[in-house]
Structure formats: C-alpha cells, structure tokens
Amino acid sequence: MSLILAIDQSTSATKAILFDARGNVLDKASRNHRQIYPQPGWVEHDAEEIWKNVLAVIGEIAKHNRAQLAKLAALSITNQRETVLVFDCKTGKPLHHALVWQDRRGDAICAKLLKQGRGPGGLHKTGLKIDTYFSASKVRWLIENKPAIAAKLKSGDAVIGTIDTYLVHRLTGGKVFATDFTNASRTLMFDIGKLKWDAQLCQLFKVPAGALPEVRESAAQFGTTDASGLLPKQIPIVGVMGDSQASLFAQRCYQTGTAKATFGTGTSVLLNIGDKMRVSEKGAVTALAWVWRGKPTYAFEGIINFSAATIEWLKNQLGLIHDAGEVEKLALSVADNGGVYFVPAFAGLSAPHWSPEARAAVVGMSAHTNKAHLVRAAQEAIAYQIRDVLDMMRADAKVGLKSLHCDGGPTKNNFIMQFTADLTRTELKVSDVAESSALGVAMQGMLGLGIYKSLNELARLPRKQKLFRPQMKAAEANKLHAGWKQAVQRVL
Image 1: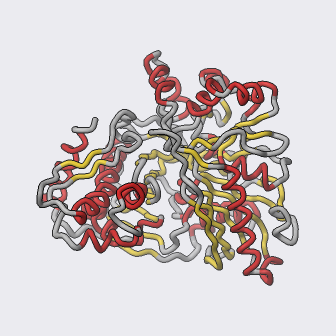
Image 2: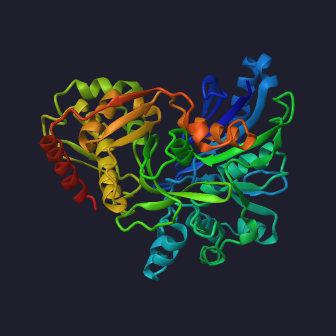
Image 3: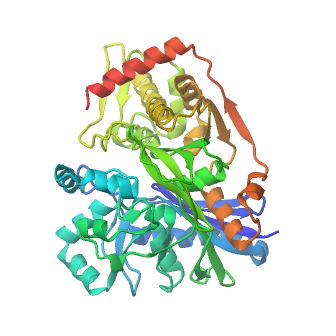
C-alpha cells in the first residue's frame, strides 16, 4: 500500500505525518517554532527556523520508518495560509522574517485604501475584505519600509510567497516556484472568479506581478524532492493546500451546504457554497475551497483570530496555567462563568464585526471572580465567536446547517465542544484524526497520484467521529449569548 508523507506547517509548529492510502496515521513528528513579537501588533516567524524544522521532522519520520520508505509515493504540504515572506530566488534564503497572518502592521495601509473607496473592488474580485489579515498589505509594508527588499523585488532577484511556496522552492532546490489556488486566494491579489493574479490589485499593493508564483491545482505535481538527502530517493511533491481548506477536504464536505470548523490558534469555519463565486452580504469572506480538473468549488468563511491562542496567552503572558491541558478541569471546577466574559480581540475582531481597532477585554469581574472563572470565560469565548459566525452564515447562505464537522487540537477538550454545541444549537461531529489538515492534503496527494479517481471514492474512506449534541436549554444559551454580545459592544 502506498504511503504519503504530509507536512503540516501551522502557526505554532511544523508536523510530519505519515499516512497510508486509507488515511490511517502511521507515525508523526513535531517541532515548535518561535513566535516573534517585535512590537505590539507585529507577529513574525523565522522562515529559516521553519525550514530547519521541516527537515528535522522529515528526518525523524525517515529514521523511524526506514523499512517503509520504499512505499513512500509522495510528499504533500499544508500550511498556515496568509503568512507571507520575501526570499532570494537563487538561494531560497528569507530576506526578512515571515509576516504572520496575525500581524497588524498593514492596518494603516488598509485604512487608507478603504477611505479611498477601494473595498468593494477587492471584495468582488478576491472575495476578501481589505484587511491586513490577508497578505497583500504586509507585502506593501515591506516594499515601502525596506528599500533593499524593494530593490531586489524590482530587479527580479527576490520573490514573494506564502509558506507553501517557500517550502516547495527549498525542497526542490529552487527548481519550482509555485503555489496552489487555495493559498493564492488568501493574498488579496488573486481573482477567484477568473482564477488568476489580478494586475490592478498587484498595482494597488505595489507588488511586482513577476515576483508572484505560478498557481496550480492542489492535486498537481510541484516537482520532486529527497528532502536534502533525508529520503532515499526523489519523490514527487503532490498535494499542496492551505490548512483550513485541507481540513474541509478531509471532512468530506464536498456537497453544497456542508461545513466544518478547525479549532486551532484561530478558528476557521468554512461552508461549501458550490461552484459559483458569491459575495457575502453579512460579513463572511468567500474562499476558494479547491479547484479540481479546472472546476472551482467555493466556500463562505468566518474567521476567528484568537481561539487556542487565548489559552496560550493565559499561559505565556499571565502565567495563570502551566499547560493547556489544565483548562478543561479548571472550567468544570466552577458552576458557571460568574458573569465574566473574555473578548479576545488581541488582533481586532474579524467576522462578523471586521473591527481591526477592537482590543481585548475582560468584562463582568467582581470580587468573587477567581482564576477558574477567567479560564472558563476564555474557553467560552471560542464558542461565542463560533455562534456569531454560524448565525451570519446561516442568514447569508440560507441553509439550516444542523451539523458541523470539527477538527483541531482543542476538540480534545470536552468542555469546549459541549459548550459550543449548546451555544450554537448544532450537532458537532468531531474527527478522531486531530491532524485533519494533513489528512486533507494527503488525500489531495492520493487524488493527484491516481490512487483515488474521484471525490466520491475519497468520501467512502472509513472514519470515526465523536458526537456532541446540544444539552443546554435554548433560553439559557440565548441569555449567555446576549451577555457576550453586550461585552463585544464595549470593545468595538
């Protein structure tokens, strides 16, 4: 049976997961990387560190599975989507730290463009808001503030890419400079209706179009690699896909009206809306879910900036907990939130508010409030934000959406899952494979290799799911949500 090695390069870590052709996890390895905060609102990653971590996790998998490597058919890549960097096209070396999707240094650029009335044009081409969450304004900031980088881009000595592009380039020894449709569609420079880079948007963000990568389908081949000699032979890179779309694919949301939520550093909720590009009227963005055999599938997306990242903030910045595994027990140690609401607007609020100026707040504390109330409120905030997004999507897409496929590390937290089911009045179907993004891109790899011939064949692959159904009375859920909405109004 053929094996697929998937690289999952996320906001917090780089993982390598070895799958068989039935989607079973055979082995995995992981390396965290640093989160770099040069000043408030700025978030960076060292792309060279990420590259070394990619080689480290591949090396670990190769060391533990030498007898299996003969069956290795392909390497696939899924990645944090909007994070962007500029790198030397000959050496592959980064010319600056990667600017992470959470980074807000492009806020002033976006505000100026919105004031000039540029918002609607970008929305109808890209499906996205003019917001620095997406890549383009961060690239413009680099061009305007780093003359040496601007000069190298102008001369053709440097290129621009999301993390997948950078890794493909390094893995192929500089032979391939390409991305896939899902990642290209997150830059604010790609027309998702025409499926090509848009010259006017590139000009708007001062980006030389020649510095942008070729765009291929997720199941296409992206060159070959032996991972700098860590693998015994050259294997094709087949399957490249942004992490949220990859998890939608892994969850078999191939039919219009099916949806998933990936719980991670942030949370991405995607709803399949079919093969016609539509612009949301309620605050969702429109995403390219995937392109297969020239035919696009689109999705509405609700973006939540801070989910598990809020728990990490409690640990790293406040020292309230020593490990994220503590939070479920702490939440259950109190009967309720004690009237406390935690609005984690550390990087503004995205859908449905789209308020980059909003800042985090804890509302409703009293002398009775203790650590457990604050930790519980931080976890409840994940569910409140998901309800806001689902309410928006239900109204926008005019679908009932009675169930939601879920994946990601926080899905192991039963308190968060049950509270989300209660608040959203939705059945949650939690995948038993936490690495759904990796599975999704591995499935794209299998599709590209011809191991499976169609989405229908992939849909029949076996899987296990844990169900969470609403238990709380609707009136109580609505009352709690009303308190959340009041708290949000205080930060907008």
